[in-house]
Length: 258
Length: 226
Image (cartoon, rainbow over all chains, first blue to last red):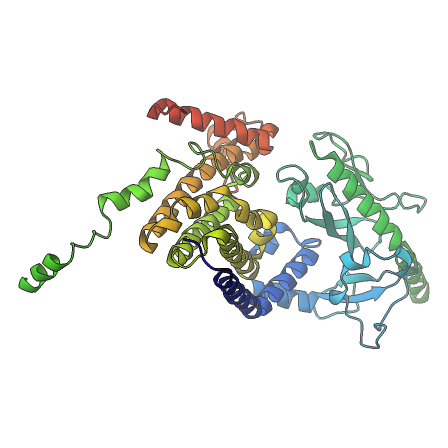
């Protein structure tokens, strides 16, 4: 049956409008839920740097949010390690709202660097570890993560990595707890205080427990591993002024106490 | 009793809700005209998502949802769809449904949304969906179309789940994330261990498993391509 052009056009327009309304309606309804899910996911990742995967799994969504509320305080610094408290438009700066991925597109000097401080419950001034977001490129798409440093600002307490499109079973293994545990206890600075970062080696199955700057690699995912290495090295470099200012701050505190 | 007979005299007796013909609509695609192993459609997603059971299950559920609903919607509209733009209309309906699935996953199962990410979107291009719309829903009543879509989707689902089972078992040594071989080692003794096969987590592993399944199936049914 051959329909007239008018019929076809009318049909198409009605179909488009109906489907469009349906989709935008769903998006409106589900929007808040999705935002919550994203926020929860981000907080889970931040906490993943300091908590064990099992510990984190045992927490319910509300518990994660309240745990985050009571244990994490955040601030934003610039490349020189100075705290940034205001957005350009004058509104207060919130670290959780800083999109590290968007900042990645700017020059390193003009980026904002959020810092999450993991503190003892009820004592916001105490520090158990500093959690630093990192961001970079994997094989197929972006990769990102969080590195938690102990109070000596060199020993890694824990890391968590995420990715958008790494190969399942190969590069995507950076999200598995087994791989992330390899970073625990490694040092990012060498004895003379130079930034060494921690790098994954090529090949898998070797023991690097003696070397504090190397971890076992990912077999079949060398490019993702190189991406992780670059991401860590770059971002630890960007945070190094903050870290050194923090370090000297600690020393003066010690002097003052003595 | 008497009223019922009079009605059936006027009208043809309605086909039973699950008559033999309708049952065949569901069961045929499981083995005899399986979309993956016989028609060899939807291979791309069968290779891509099947490294582990859990995402595969979510993928299977999503595909069932999309095929059944799109078959239903297209079948409802079948007499109004202008034949010259029918492919675009089908595509629009399928794309809408897929976007719905993706949005729902994002809101209620964010972890799965992250894991499946692009593959949910790729259901749009899954040849099985469009194939069923063109071949069946455009010319059949809504209820039959639902059954047909359900059958095809089940045929797709059990194959990808079977592939995922073997790939996860031999590639990661686990099933649904439960480390099978490590648990076995706990019973048998520490000497028992299993080296996972890296080939299984690559698409090549999926090809091999799929090939084996097709081989076994065709040997049993005696199906030959003409």
